[in-house]
Length: 134
Image 1: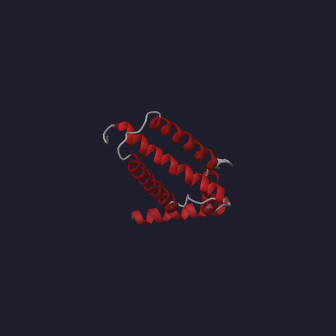
Image 2: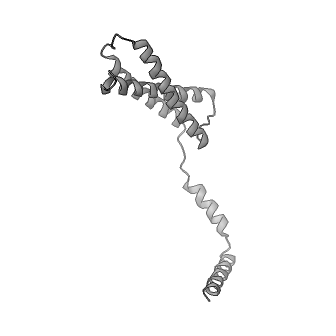
Image 3: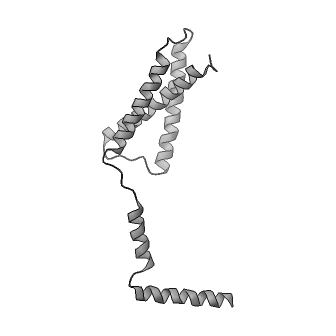
């Protein structure tokens, strides 16, 4: 009995869709187009510039005092490799989500370079300012 009621209700909805003149798929497509937000023209450049600005602040915090004398070159190399590894994971995730595409080579290099510099400076700041590793 419940199935008959649901089937009858489905038939009523189909008849109403016929008389309304628009199909539900057309309404869904229209709603999807209007729901998408439009990115600004220079979104990639703004994000890249912001990351470089934050990285500059982190690097200033780290390098305002002299670094410790022992093995600081080896420490900087290891920290750079850690920053590049974290950046690579982020690039992989962006690629999987299909968000890592650019219209020009300049945008690709600017974004990738700024992300790498940001993560290296973040790891440097955490390493030298936390006091856990010294």
